[in-house]
Image 1 (cartoon, rainbow, N blue to C red):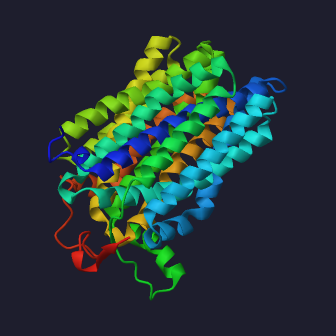
Image 2 (image 1 turned 60 degrees about the horizontal axis):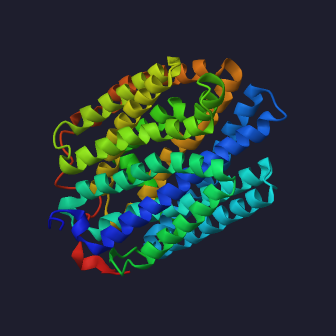
Length: 429
């Protein structure tokens, strides 16, 4: 039996957690195979460096929908029932996975098809991310929100641990198997989301022009330099340190471990992240959170450099696990700051901007790594990215002294916007 102070004591959060776990398993099991197939198909007709370039274009295909839809998705998450948005995006992901399963079964998978599905998955994530991020604080009391964020991150990271090796194992049984598995798991996600009942919501002011409302997320970040600094730090750090984008190249041409080894490499960062998330769930950070954020980013860069030089699979796995642990601390601090410092009526829009920054660091980081690897080689690209990440941590400590001054997660007594919990304005979704 869960303790009353645990977010798992709340049924709606349990459904949310299970749905996120299933969704992350499906996404990671499928995306790792999309990358593998894209690189494998490209290698049949292209030189290795040109094939690596296709991994960069896959990242672009996923990021462009997010960039184009950010204003709309954040506004939608604050205006429309967040549960409905999450359910609709889960259904779209079911269609994407099912389509790839059918093409793999028929033997008709092509690079254009993979790029198209990657773009559609980018659309789904553009709507799902701000809705789910804004939904989570509606499910638990504010006092246990940091623990809920850690547990939610653990669900994501657990899926990231198990998804890649599961995808690699199923791919060995047949190219359609991982996509069929993802289709089923997305179905589980949709079922869990359907079980979440109405939740308290803060009403969105419908008297203002929609465009003005859409811009509120950017305006709020412009006023809150602590949150802006934390989000932009993650953007540039991961943008430069995108070693994970090069994993198919490392698995095939550097470490020579094949698709099974690729699954292990993809899972290693999440192993470190899950262990860190479990620790943070039991012992949340309480003091010097800003300093710990900067240190974590620096360690992320150091681990990236070590991975870039490694030629031994066990050492590479240790480096990636350390990289994932450092990234988990960054995610935990950033998400907690966003949720506790942002009024509920704006969480969707601020979350959409945050998602744009995060995906910019992930998808554009993949693109940057792919393009740089095509120019100077994969090893040099990874090492240079790690050095750049360390430099970003040092520069951000100077540009945003608010980060160093953040001792705890407690927001100031007076925010520029309405407080997060204003029961007088709350209504059922």
